[in-house]
Image: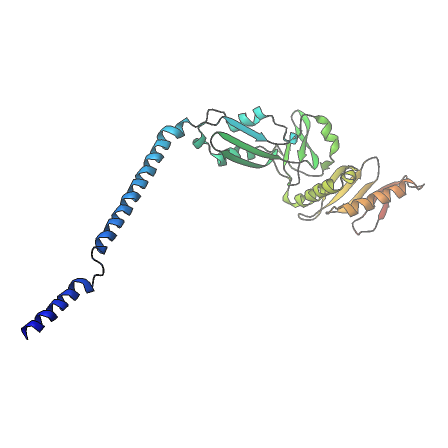
Length: 286
Protein backbone atom coordinates (compact mmCIF):
# COMPACT_ATOMS: atom_id res chain seq x y z
CA UNK A 1 0.00 0.00 0.00
CA UNK A 2 2.65 2.42 0.91
CA UNK A 3 4.57 1.80 -2.32
CA UNK A 4 1.53 2.63 -4.52
CA UNK A 5 0.96 5.97 -2.86
CA UNK A 6 4.52 7.01 -3.45
CA UNK A 7 4.28 6.25 -7.18
CA UNK A 8 1.06 8.22 -7.59
CA UNK A 9 2.41 11.24 -5.75
CA UNK A 10 5.52 11.29 -7.92
CA UNK A 11 3.41 11.24 -11.07
CA UNK A 12 1.29 14.08 -9.76
CA UNK A 13 4.40 16.02 -8.89
CA UNK A 14 5.73 15.45 -12.37
CA UNK A 15 2.55 16.83 -13.90
CA UNK A 16 2.68 19.91 -11.71
CA UNK A 17 6.21 20.70 -12.84
CA UNK A 18 6.05 19.98 -16.59
CA UNK A 19 2.44 19.63 -17.64
CA UNK A 20 1.46 23.39 -17.45
CA UNK A 21 4.58 25.10 -18.76
CA UNK A 22 5.65 23.14 -21.86
CA UNK A 23 9.36 22.91 -22.57
CA UNK A 24 11.67 24.06 -19.80
CA UNK A 25 13.21 27.56 -20.30
CA UNK A 26 10.84 28.80 -23.10
CA UNK A 27 9.62 31.79 -21.05
CA UNK A 28 13.19 32.92 -20.39
CA UNK A 29 14.10 32.83 -24.10
CA UNK A 30 11.00 34.90 -25.04
CA UNK A 31 11.94 37.56 -22.52
CA UNK A 32 15.45 37.77 -23.97
CA UNK A 33 14.07 38.28 -27.49
CA UNK A 34 11.79 41.09 -26.32
CA UNK A 35 14.67 42.78 -24.52
CA UNK A 36 16.88 42.61 -27.64
CA UNK A 37 14.07 44.06 -29.79
CA UNK A 38 13.59 47.06 -27.50
CA UNK A 39 17.35 47.63 -27.22
CA UNK A 40 17.66 47.73 -31.02
CA UNK A 41 14.65 50.03 -31.28
CA UNK A 42 16.14 52.45 -28.76
CA UNK A 43 19.48 52.42 -30.60
CA UNK A 44 17.70 53.14 -33.89
CA UNK A 45 15.73 56.04 -32.39
CA UNK A 46 18.88 57.51 -30.85
CA UNK A 47 20.65 57.29 -34.22
CA UNK A 48 17.75 59.10 -35.95
CA UNK A 49 17.77 61.84 -33.31
CA UNK A 50 21.54 62.29 -33.60
CA UNK A 51 21.33 62.50 -37.40
CA UNK A 52 18.48 65.00 -37.23
CA UNK A 53 20.32 67.21 -34.76
CA UNK A 54 23.47 67.05 -36.89
CA UNK A 55 21.50 67.97 -40.04
CA UNK A 56 19.65 70.81 -38.30
CA UNK A 57 22.68 72.44 -36.69
CA UNK A 58 25.51 71.63 -39.13
CA UNK A 59 24.21 70.74 -42.60
CA UNK A 60 21.02 72.82 -43.06
CA UNK A 61 22.63 76.19 -42.24
CA UNK A 62 25.18 75.64 -45.01
CA UNK A 63 22.57 74.95 -47.75
CA UNK A 64 21.97 78.07 -49.85
CA UNK A 65 20.05 78.79 -53.04
CA UNK A 66 22.75 78.66 -55.70
CA UNK A 67 20.57 78.60 -58.82
CA UNK A 68 17.33 80.43 -59.67
CA UNK A 69 15.54 79.29 -62.83
CA UNK A 70 12.91 81.62 -64.29
CA UNK A 71 10.59 80.05 -66.86
CA UNK A 72 8.39 82.53 -68.71
CA UNK A 73 7.52 83.68 -72.21
CA UNK A 74 8.62 86.91 -73.90
CA UNK A 75 5.09 88.30 -73.48
CA UNK A 76 5.80 88.86 -69.78
CA UNK A 77 7.83 91.96 -70.63
CA UNK A 78 10.11 91.54 -67.58
CA UNK A 79 13.77 90.55 -67.56
CA UNK A 80 15.22 88.07 -65.07
CA UNK A 81 16.81 90.99 -63.24
CA UNK A 82 13.38 92.65 -62.96
CA UNK A 83 11.83 89.47 -61.54
CA UNK A 84 14.62 89.06 -58.99
CA UNK A 85 14.34 92.68 -57.93
CA UNK A 86 10.56 92.46 -57.53
CA UNK A 87 10.73 89.27 -55.46
CA UNK A 88 13.83 90.18 -53.42
CA UNK A 89 15.51 86.88 -54.31
CA UNK A 90 19.24 86.28 -54.47
CA UNK A 91 21.68 83.38 -54.20
CA UNK A 92 22.54 84.14 -50.57
CA UNK A 93 19.25 82.88 -49.16
CA UNK A 94 19.16 79.75 -47.05
CA UNK A 95 17.31 76.91 -48.78
CA UNK A 96 15.04 76.18 -45.82
CA UNK A 97 14.22 79.85 -45.16
CA UNK A 98 12.76 80.42 -48.63
CA UNK A 99 8.95 80.70 -48.44
CA UNK A 100 7.48 79.73 -51.80
CA UNK A 101 4.01 81.10 -50.98
CA UNK A 102 5.44 84.55 -50.20
CA UNK A 103 7.38 84.61 -53.48
CA UNK A 104 4.30 83.60 -55.46
CA UNK A 105 2.27 86.32 -53.73
CA UNK A 106 4.79 89.01 -54.70
CA UNK A 107 4.78 87.91 -58.33
CA UNK A 108 0.99 87.73 -58.51
CA UNK A 109 0.85 91.36 -57.36
CA UNK A 110 2.34 92.29 -60.76
CA UNK A 111 -0.67 93.05 -63.03
CA UNK A 112 0.96 91.45 -66.09
CA UNK A 113 1.30 88.10 -64.27
CA UNK A 114 -1.61 85.66 -64.45
CA UNK A 115 -0.28 82.52 -62.72
CA UNK A 116 2.86 81.57 -60.77
CA UNK A 117 4.34 78.26 -59.63
CA UNK A 118 7.34 78.32 -57.24
CA UNK A 119 9.20 75.09 -56.50
CA UNK A 120 12.31 74.30 -54.47
CA UNK A 121 14.55 71.55 -55.84
CA UNK A 122 16.86 70.09 -53.21
CA UNK A 123 19.57 70.96 -52.40
CA UNK A 124 20.10 74.40 -53.94
CA UNK A 125 17.71 75.29 -56.79
CA UNK A 126 14.62 77.49 -56.97
CA UNK A 127 12.34 77.29 -60.03
CA UNK A 128 9.87 80.09 -60.88
CA UNK A 129 7.32 79.33 -63.60
CA UNK A 130 5.50 82.52 -64.57
CA UNK A 131 2.50 82.73 -66.90
CA UNK A 132 1.83 86.18 -68.33
CA UNK A 133 -1.54 87.68 -69.19
CA UNK A 134 -2.42 87.66 -72.88
CA UNK A 135 -3.95 90.86 -74.27
CA UNK A 136 -7.26 90.72 -76.10
CA UNK A 137 -7.69 94.47 -76.51
CA UNK A 138 -6.25 97.92 -75.90
CA UNK A 139 -7.72 100.29 -73.33
CA UNK A 140 -6.88 103.98 -73.63
CA UNK A 141 -6.22 105.50 -70.19
CA UNK A 142 -6.20 109.25 -69.67
CA UNK A 143 -3.39 110.50 -67.46
CA UNK A 144 -1.59 113.73 -66.72
CA UNK A 145 0.90 112.86 -69.46
CA UNK A 146 -1.87 112.29 -72.03
CA UNK A 147 -3.54 109.14 -73.28
CA UNK A 148 -1.69 105.93 -72.47
CA UNK A 149 -2.56 102.60 -74.13
CA UNK A 150 -2.84 99.65 -71.75
CA UNK A 151 -3.57 96.01 -72.51
CA UNK A 152 -6.66 94.25 -71.18
CA UNK A 153 -6.98 90.46 -70.96
CA UNK A 154 -9.91 88.03 -70.92
CA UNK A 155 -10.38 88.60 -67.17
CA UNK A 156 -10.76 92.34 -67.73
CA UNK A 157 -7.44 93.15 -66.00
CA UNK A 158 -5.48 96.16 -67.25
CA UNK A 159 -1.70 95.90 -67.46
CA UNK A 160 1.16 97.65 -69.30
CA UNK A 161 1.96 96.78 -72.88
CA UNK A 162 5.37 95.57 -73.93
CA UNK A 163 7.89 98.20 -74.83
CA UNK A 164 7.38 97.36 -78.49
CA UNK A 165 4.63 99.86 -79.31
CA UNK A 166 3.82 98.13 -82.62
CA UNK A 167 1.80 95.57 -80.62
CA UNK A 168 -0.85 98.26 -80.13
CA UNK A 169 -1.98 97.72 -83.72
CA UNK A 170 -2.53 93.99 -83.15
CA UNK A 171 -5.55 94.40 -80.90
CA UNK A 172 -8.89 96.23 -81.09
CA UNK A 173 -9.41 99.36 -79.02
CA UNK A 174 -11.91 98.92 -76.18
CA UNK A 175 -14.10 102.00 -75.73
CA UNK A 176 -17.37 103.07 -74.16
CA UNK A 177 -16.31 102.11 -70.63
CA UNK A 178 -16.60 104.84 -68.03
CA UNK A 179 -14.03 104.13 -65.33
CA UNK A 180 -12.62 107.20 -63.56
CA UNK A 181 -9.21 106.91 -61.92
CA UNK A 182 -8.54 103.65 -63.72
CA UNK A 183 -4.94 102.48 -63.38
CA UNK A 184 -2.52 99.61 -63.84
CA UNK A 185 -3.96 96.41 -62.34
CA UNK A 186 -7.55 97.66 -62.31
CA UNK A 187 -10.40 95.49 -63.63
CA UNK A 188 -13.16 96.32 -66.05
CA UNK A 189 -16.70 95.99 -64.67
CA UNK A 190 -17.61 92.33 -64.14
CA UNK A 191 -20.54 92.57 -66.55
CA UNK A 192 -18.09 93.17 -69.43
CA UNK A 193 -15.76 90.24 -68.69
CA UNK A 194 -17.99 87.69 -70.43
CA UNK A 195 -17.54 89.53 -73.72
CA UNK A 196 -13.79 89.81 -73.16
CA UNK A 197 -13.67 86.01 -72.87
CA UNK A 198 -15.60 85.76 -76.15
CA UNK A 199 -13.06 88.06 -77.77
CA UNK A 200 -10.22 85.90 -76.44
CA UNK A 201 -11.88 82.73 -77.77
CA UNK A 202 -12.24 84.26 -81.25
CA UNK A 203 -8.63 85.43 -81.22
CA UNK A 204 -7.40 81.93 -80.33
CA UNK A 205 -9.59 80.03 -82.80
CA UNK A 206 -9.77 82.47 -85.73
CA UNK A 207 -7.11 85.19 -85.40
CA UNK A 208 -7.64 86.23 -89.01
CA UNK A 209 -11.20 87.27 -88.10
CA UNK A 210 -10.39 89.02 -84.82
CA UNK A 211 -7.78 91.04 -86.71
CA UNK A 212 -10.60 92.59 -88.78
CA UNK A 213 -11.96 94.45 -85.75
CA UNK A 214 -10.43 97.87 -85.08
CA UNK A 215 -12.65 98.91 -82.17
CA UNK A 216 -15.07 97.35 -79.70
CA UNK A 217 -17.46 99.86 -78.17
CA UNK A 218 -19.64 99.00 -75.19
CA UNK A 219 -23.02 100.76 -75.22
CA UNK A 220 -24.74 100.83 -71.83
CA UNK A 221 -28.41 99.95 -71.63
CA UNK A 222 -30.70 99.75 -68.62
CA UNK A 223 -29.12 98.54 -65.37
CA UNK A 224 -25.98 96.48 -65.92
CA UNK A 225 -26.99 95.35 -69.38
CA UNK A 226 -25.05 96.46 -72.43
CA UNK A 227 -24.62 95.81 -76.12
CA UNK A 228 -21.58 95.99 -78.37
CA UNK A 229 -20.84 97.93 -81.52
CA UNK A 230 -17.96 96.69 -83.69
CA UNK A 231 -15.96 98.94 -86.00
CA UNK A 232 -14.40 96.81 -88.75
CA UNK A 233 -11.01 97.59 -90.25
CA UNK A 234 -11.15 99.57 -93.54
CA UNK A 235 -14.89 100.16 -93.30
CA UNK A 236 -17.01 103.17 -92.43
CA UNK A 237 -19.95 100.97 -91.46
CA UNK A 238 -20.34 99.98 -87.84
CA UNK A 239 -21.93 96.68 -86.78
CA UNK A 240 -24.22 96.32 -83.73
CA UNK A 241 -24.17 92.76 -82.36
CA UNK A 242 -25.70 92.59 -78.88
CA UNK A 243 -23.53 91.30 -76.01
CA UNK A 244 -22.07 88.04 -77.37
CA UNK A 245 -19.45 87.25 -79.97
CA UNK A 246 -18.39 84.06 -81.74
CA UNK A 247 -16.65 82.97 -84.93
CA UNK A 248 -19.93 82.27 -86.77
CA UNK A 249 -21.18 85.81 -86.15
CA UNK A 250 -17.93 87.35 -87.33
CA UNK A 251 -17.96 85.31 -90.53
CA UNK A 252 -21.52 86.46 -91.19
CA UNK A 253 -20.44 90.07 -90.61
CA UNK A 254 -17.51 89.74 -93.03
CA UNK A 255 -19.76 88.18 -95.70
CA UNK A 256 -22.28 91.04 -95.45
CA UNK A 257 -19.54 93.69 -95.63
CA UNK A 258 -18.09 92.01 -98.72
CA UNK A 259 -21.49 92.00 -100.41
CA UNK A 260 -22.08 95.65 -99.55
CA UNK A 261 -18.66 96.68 -100.86
CA UNK A 262 -19.59 95.29 -104.28
CA UNK A 263 -22.95 97.08 -104.46
CA UNK A 264 -23.48 100.63 -105.64
CA UNK A 265 -25.57 103.15 -103.81
CA UNK A 266 -24.44 102.04 -100.33
CA UNK A 267 -22.36 105.10 -99.54
CA UNK A 268 -24.91 106.34 -97.02
CA UNK A 269 -25.04 103.08 -95.10
CA UNK A 270 -24.13 103.88 -91.50
CA UNK A 271 -24.84 100.73 -89.47
CA UNK A 272 -25.65 97.03 -89.79
CA UNK A 273 -27.72 95.61 -86.94
CA UNK A 274 -27.17 91.89 -86.32
CA UNK A 275 -28.80 91.63 -82.90
CA UNK A 276 -31.70 89.54 -84.20
CA UNK A 277 -29.51 87.24 -86.29
CA UNK A 278 -30.60 88.92 -89.53
CA UNK A 279 -28.99 91.98 -91.05
CA UNK A 280 -30.90 95.25 -90.70
CA UNK A 281 -29.46 98.25 -92.53
CA UNK A 282 -29.55 101.77 -91.12
CA UNK A 283 -28.99 104.61 -93.55
CA UNK A 284 -27.25 107.79 -92.46
CA UNK A 285 -29.74 110.57 -91.67
CA UNK A 286 -32.73 108.23 -91.22
